[in-house]
Length: 186
Image 1 (cartoon, rainbow, N blue to C red):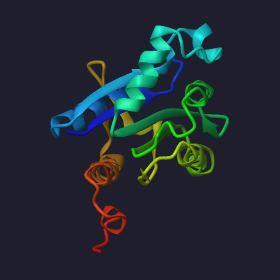
Image 2: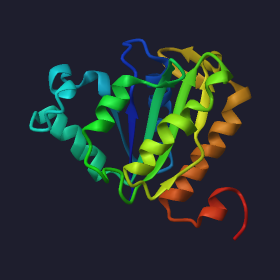
Image 3: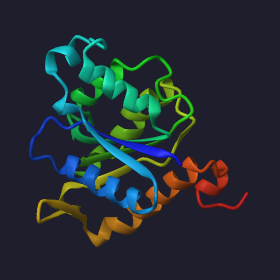
């Protein structure tokens, strides 16, 4: 069985991005996959900033990445880019830290003007880390993240498209050929 690691890169304790990560972890777990959620903000700051991979918490986080079949990167958009906190974590991974993995990049933000931050900023880093397959990135508007009882629900205007991207991610995890993952028959 493949396992999925959601990595949230928001520094905020009341992060909508982190709640979306929880939402996706629950959804993927319901599909029968083992899931875990790594909240980068919870890692020891000094060791994270110093790239101290000998710190037990940092070593465990890097081990979680190594052991996962698939990665979901969830980041808020800051200054038209992914978060510096996520960048700091990705920088301490080995050169091919995503080798053999399917990856789903996801960002949240207040304006569709920042939608390309995923493709111009995050996607090249994911590729350089050796991902086997990077599925279609997804940008989720903050206003489409509805809070209910401390959990995120996705507004109907984004829910269907997000479900489609998650389905692409499942297919990539299962090794379905790229053309089929994109919704075309091979």
